Amino acid sequence: MTLYFDGGARGDPARMEIGVVVHGHSYIRDDMGVGDNCTAEWLALRFAAVIAAAAGARDVLFIGDARTIVEQALGRWACRSPQLLPHRDAWVQARKGFDRVHVRHVPRSKNLAGIALARRHPR
Image (cartoon, rainbow, N blue to C red; front, side):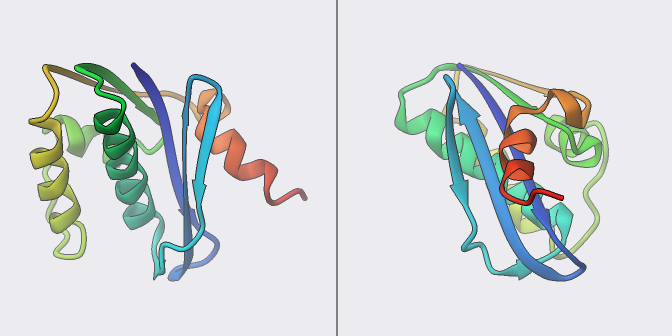
């Protein structure tokens, strides 16, 4: 199963929104509280994991455009922020529920979840 994830805050800090796109369906939540972009990205990845688990997925690919979150989720970059560590730890637990987990970085223009969120805020 392939899931695109994205999160954002329009300010720092600001109200956060997250999105996940899977099989052409968008799951958007804008009730995520106040925080920064990194927190919103982690929340989006965790939400994607919940959706994948609920669908019974065993082999999953999570695709996002936040390089920091992707690299931290892969364990290649350390997560030192006290506010982000709980999200990283929850992710580590969530991924144990799958047989195979892949996380890939793509440019913003290729992230279907980012595109879905951007459509909500036309310029």
